[in-house]
Amino acid sequence: MSIHKVLVVDDSKTELLFLSDLLQKQPATPEAYLRLAEAYRNTGRPELEVATLDKLARIQPDYPMVKVLAAKAMLSLDPVDYPAVLKTLVEAEKSSPQDADVFYLRGRAYAATDRAREAVAAFQRAIELRPMDPAPYYQLGLTWRKLGQESLSREALNRMQHVKQAAGASDQK
Image 1 (tube, helix red, strand yellow):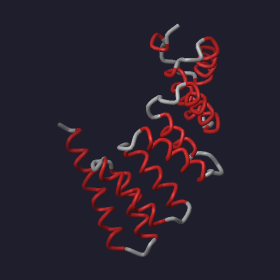
Image 2 (spheres, rainbow, N blue to C red):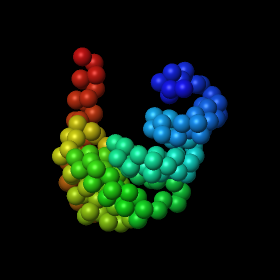
Image 3 (cartoon, rainbow, N blue to C red):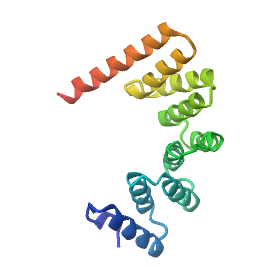
């Protein structure tokens, strides 16, 4: 049974059962792990999302993006284990050193742990790698504000608005 042949399931519980069953029968199905992790996220169960992505990372350690997805899921946990998030992002950077998400998520973790200067550097790197993504500009603006740098904060937030408008204009074409 291929994950590609699966119909869209509207019922999250049914999808969870189906994907869990599929993974018991075919444990080396990366797409199923990703779908199962997404289903857990959509049902508000980030701890199971993290566990599912960890299983995928163990089965296929070179699978693209798994560490980034795991770090993103870990930031949804309550409480967040920031040292574990940062460790996961170090691993993600090794396999994807040009991935803007690695630096964006690192910036969020640093900002949440009062490491504002490191957060600034991480957000700036995310912006270098993906300049048309408004999210790092927003987080950078908040971080500059936290550091008392109002003019830099306004500059980052204005840039975020510009990027959003540019994205909206290109969507209308």
